[in-house]
Length: 267
Ligand SMILES: Nc1ncnc2c1ncn2[C@@H]1O[C@H](COP(=O)(O)OP(=O)(O)OP(=O)(O)O)[C@@H](O)[C@H]1O
Image (tube, rainbow, N blue to C red; front, side, top):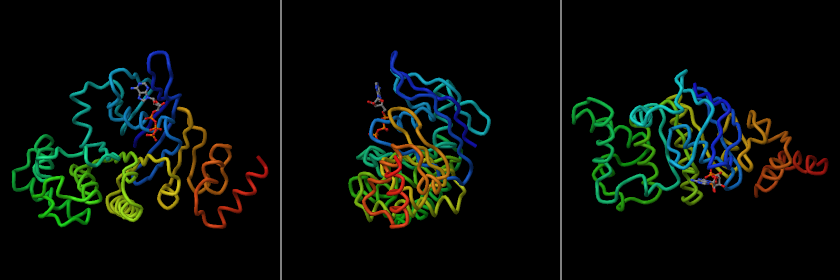
């Protein structure tokens, strides 16, 4: 569904993302993992045409056969939300502080659909319910009246409003406590199973993707150093950097730990 071939991102003469290939299918959960500054966010922003003006992307980004790279902003704006939706780490930044959550969700629906006011409200409440929030209460709340976990759920509900094909989640749980973080991941897993949405999950924490990712891409210094089925990578990492990343996971089940210890001895 989403096919990226030879994507590069440059800043002046400096290459920040080296040729990157990625294939994401309907219902798939692909995790892009790696250390801070490895190029994960730039890759995700390039997909929706969100790179800042000083950065330049080359290569090919196709969504269901349609080339997205270098589309005019007016077309990209339409694609973002309807086909590709984002959830970011900064859930507070997802909403304007002094406008109710409902009004902001409604605004998004109004911009993308010709539904009546009543239909739009119904859709917003339905989505808020889907992310396990007290829908009516949250709809009428201001962002500052909600907890971090509730706000991130509301941001997810907003991202899902138009039933996008791809959800790009850039470290959406990093700013949350571990229990809330886990509940958000479980929620997105459930939504993925129910809707078949494809997930591109960006993280520096491999613990997060152990349970969820079908496919894993490991990035280091702007390069993909390892990619494949996440199960294979967890059991049989080939790149020393991946081995290092996996070995640094604090509480890995003993069966993985043994495999890794053997790997480290060999390397
Ligand atoms: N506008 C820019 N101009 C120049 N360099 C940039 C710009 N934006 C990002 N970079 C650099 O590109 C590299 C990759 O950044 P990116 O944000 O993609 O990393 P990341 O893997 O998402 O890191 P993190 O996990 O910390 O979010 C970093 O070295 C960053 O400093």
